[in-house]
Amino acid sequence: MNTKNIVVLALLAGIGVVLHTVMPSFLGIKPDMMLAMMFLGIILIPELKSVMLLAIVTGVLSALTTGFPGGQIPNIIDKPITALVFLGLFLALKKYRNSIVSVGVLTAIGTLVSGTIFLTAAFFLVGLPASFTALFAAGVLPAIALNTIIMIILYPVALSIVKRTKLTTPSVIQK
Image (cartoon, rainbow, N blue to C red; front, side, top):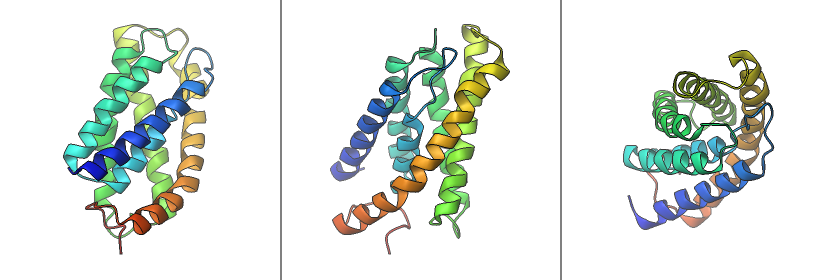
């Protein structure tokens, strides 16, 4: 991990926490906009150490800004698991990982995984304020749509910035 990569990850986490903070909650659950920034960081810098650092920071920041009653621990549990699943899927798609379609699909899958892990952890640790299905429909489904749209918009912009700044990243997106 070099300093430039850490700064990029910190900026993405900062943007994510602002998005997460301003997002209104529905039935006590906020669509997690911080996930899109975490996924973008994983795509740009797919190193295990960087991914785990980003996941832990994202989990803590999500826990601090959550509107879900008792959602602090589920956020901290959810982010590292989701990050590892996302990284695994991203690395498995060697041939297609630079496609905007695959990035959008990966974002949707990652958000689905995150929401499911979060709600399951919350169910077992603190209980749910409404049914799993209602919370899934009110929080996870909108987050899937919003994160996918955000990623489709931000990925080409981030890719352009990375190429212009010569960011040191092991990702294959630099050509």
